[in-house]
Length: 372
Image (cartoon, rainbow, N blue to C red):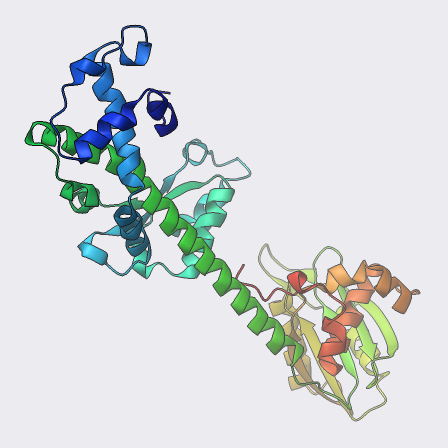
């Protein structure tokens, strides 16, 4: 290492020299030259060893640690700017359009050249920066204005006039090697801690609200788990959540972007609805793939009064965790005779009737209510 650690410097007796400097003495460095020791065999090397020791020593001063703490609180202390900045990583700069990670450039485009006062960086932005960094797209860091060196407590030390220039060099070195990096690490850690606490609070609040969703009891529910290649899985359950009928219909592709329900698909849906033994039916459409198209089709059927004599209405339900649940041992035990894809539709239907009883079957991390 080009730098002597304070322990090594102390072994060389440099700490004794520095104590004399602190006492205001004028020290003749020539008397400390020791030809037998490589690190101390010239005045220049003695001075270098002293510089490294003093840089480390003044960084450990109580006043310096207080300065670090105050700067880390992000309250514009001393008017020194602390920023959060980011730049593209080497990996990101070399990405080509056919690379699998290329879409990440668009996904994180707001954070590829980020530069903002650390006081005003929001928790979600810190999390996004951290995610982009973990994907290898950006490098982000905290940057402290170099002017912080003007306020280094060591500048107030009273050394002999002959050693004032040496003190300036030591303070400059300590600021660059110790003070600024320490503040940057401290601020980064503080920002990450704050962001993680915020994410946990947000997640807890959202899970609570999800579990306390008002149930829609007293009516049968026809749930649709939309999809393209595997079709739209359907499940009709009665007011108590028992499975009455299941089925699958397929959307027809009319163009590259346009899919719709044809008469055959409508027939499957209407045939299932006819099994309803109530005057009112709730149709729950999952919010995943193809959801919008299925919603439009169901709304059109309701408008045409196609479900008559049953009075039908529809709602949109979160699909998060449904596919996870359908593959669990619990789902297999509850719905042993149903295909794994149909089980997710049953789960959606039961979420409408008794949300909390259904959501507690799924690990919270799969509920889709976190910050990311």
